[in-house]
Length: 267
Image 1 (cartoon, rainbow, N blue to C red):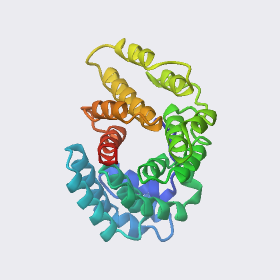
Image 2 (image 1 turned 180 degrees about the vertical axis):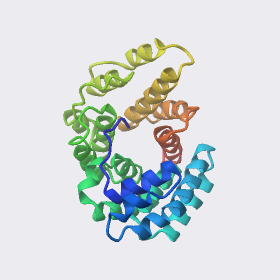
Image 3 (image 1 turned 45 degrees about the vertical axis):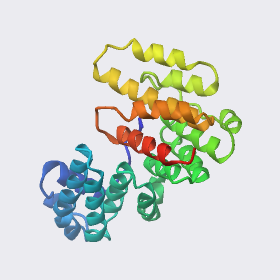
């Protein structure tokens, strides 16, 4: 997802600073009452989270899940742990296990729910489409220009209701300049076709990082479109192509999880 910068509490920022610098930011933490113990524990949490992401980077879903299990067990009272473990579970294909962690995080920090597009994807994967629809509508209040948010919203509405309802309720997302986002949105609206999306992607320099990611996004959202419209064979074809993306990041992992879920679903 192409998203705005999330908002974090002082403690979250300190934990992230410690993680990025490889040290505890003692002076800053000392100014936050009651924060010293949490900050001192941050290196342990950082190491556990890094272990989970390292497993994801090498395609080891079982290792990532084991790391998330350890995070939940050893850091059960730390909001940053709930959020990190939720992300790892989701990327490793355990959407249902991510949901209670995201919900606990939102209960602690309700003002941050609009930023949690990850939670919306987990809801969609778990079949909680109506809740997913509401989350993507909420996310638009902080990230109105993200076409991906509009496409996930379309998917949830189509699954919860009908493709016709999804078309009527499709969210606007102006100004997303990533190829082929604007054309994908037009296709979902019925204003462009798959060939136009493919042509725009194919015009990018072959072998470039931009071309690789554009191909991934095209295949993922073409798959989701056909899935939403009830065209399972076409959805499977595009999802399989999306799952071959070489780059490893949050969304390419989501694409691989979606491909597995689609194949496991009843025909």
